[in-house]
Length: 598
Image (cartoon, rainbow, N blue to C red; front, top):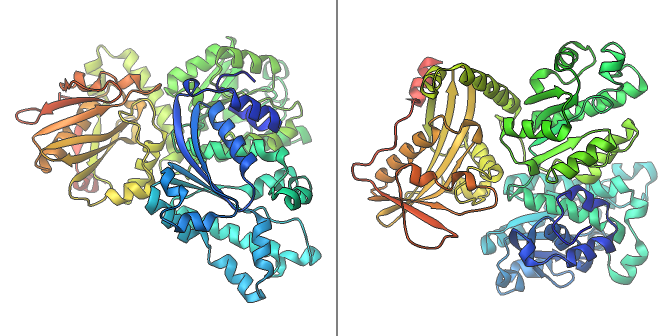
């Protein structure tokens, strides 16, 4: 491990604790591109957990300023408005309860009270206090279900057994977390993955109140860092898959389509199970892409016709199959999808190809897959490569959006001019405010978007919900369609009234629709919102980050004037009198128009 931030973050889960901590200590503030104010509250010893989580975040480029509460002070810190928690003003609060402390509490209760202990979900009250007092994102660890089985195989059927109570409590916590916008760390899943016999160290609990063996802190802390960073726009958006001996067994070019292994043999079933997991990821909204050294026609024929394939051509946003080197082909995929390399995972059975891509494209996550294809599925959970949020209605159609974009590029290549191309698309857009239908997608864009994102403010779903109906604020969404397909909601903006000015607090757009006039259309919606608020000027902000240089000149291109001030937060202004957005080729439709047409 070098003394710079780690691009291959999956590997942090495989480090011994002492190496992870040593590497984290060598990271300086200057080497980190961002920072987070963090608070950790636990009812077990959290010193090593804190160090491991800080190391993971710093090695991933995020400097931490951490408040660690005293042992077993979760409730006190949350309920006391003068506690160190609130003085620290954290952006993220991690709650780390452990089953050993919970067991001590449960053992003193009657059978009926034990059942009540699971149904009340005691953390909900604390979540509300912490959110109201700090506005922080809350990250809640579940409890590891204990290994002890006092009723033998019937332990889980005994409602008052500790294992049964903990299982019900975890389920209740997970359901409540969805309702309250709290992030969950599935500690139980990790303990089960590594094995309860190794996870729990009763000697260390008795001596130092350590909730788990320190050997498993790196993967646990890495998983927690995934959850924290996902809310900051850092997570996997695309899984790039090799084919030969990765998605199917054998070499297509040598063996032929009839002899590759998928599903009908023991080896083939292992590949089909991997396809099944990839299919689930695609349904959740992750993009799938093919990067294979093969003939594309032969590849497409297998994907389309092989009876045992679960993944078909329509499941892939990009299929690149040729005999060029794989790093170059991944660059082609990145250009086609227009997403960052750091949001890509590449799965390939070949050590040579994995090493080549790591060396050529260090931001792409390339895990070290086991040689045995049946072991790949067991290895993937260790690295937690696919952290993300719940799917929205548009996620299942994401691959289709990108396939339609390929058709649009083909149309552009044959068009006489860009104007002819845009006219030929026959684009239509619907502009709506924030409502129950659009908020899940709005939240997703706010969390996911990095490139076309003027201010990179990461609002929670609760915060976005609270904006609905506010008098001095307007939320805007733009849904775009054309003759080649529906693009979904492609732009989100938030305008706040500040005196006589309207401030563009947030402006986000999908990079898939750049250059089609959506920028101009959205500006028109912002101008209308500002005038509705009775404002005389519209002010836009641009906060430069490592990823949003794409929009550095947006406001000036649209006719705004740069105001003197801080380069770290540039402001641009336009007077609303007699100012209109530049023209575009998009036809505006109202909800009534759409209903009548449908």
